[in-house]
Length: 294
Image 1 (cartoon, rainbow, N blue to C red):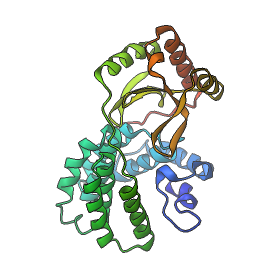
Image 2 (image 1 turned 180 degrees about the horizontal axis):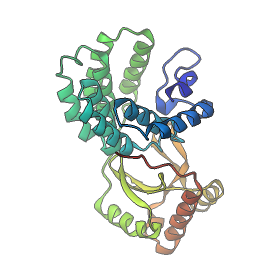
Image 3 (image 1 turned 60 degrees about the vertical axis):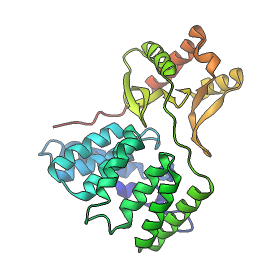
Image 4 (image 1 turned 135 degrees about the horizontal axis):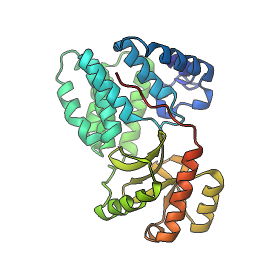
């Protein structure tokens, strides 16, 4: 399935494009469908490293957007793979999944230990990963130090350009550390989640979210309530409340998600209507197949 996104892994100038920057509309859907069918057949046999790695690839290639990636499922697959194939590379990939599923604070101690591993410390990848996670944690100075170490070790020119650009952006426009949601807002989310019926509640990037058939439709980010709405509902919401699209990082809006104004969060009748609309939209989205275990 990784072959399905091969043409989108680099820009016109040859610059590397990470998963969050790739144009998924250009991915080969026929190849992805073939891969999904092959994966279903493979699951009838014995579970081993190759099958688990194929499932990991499937988690990425079947996600409609980067934000919709099921990092909990990816982390579970890496836990399973690490039990079979306990290598530094698998442990490093698992640490990335920990950072995405539960937040950078949980991943940094894992990366600190892995940076001491002889199999990794001479490679640019551990330092590049730790730089990114430091940056997500708001630790810009530590991130810049790790980027320098990665640049000292990298040998591939395209990767060098990517790391050099990432370091420059971190220096010029440091990423703010995401703040925890206040307890009062979390309590309010718990109340509103009751309106979501049988939706699953999970943590994504350390924030509580509601998920229906694999699709997130309501969640918290810092001090804001976020809702996923259909296009017509979204236009109505933004017009009625002078609202805005959810933009977790500057310049990276998530176009289906809106930020609920604080006054609306406390309006039981009004916010309840929008939570129900968000849930209704999630019901219409294609279901993500649950990842099979065992």
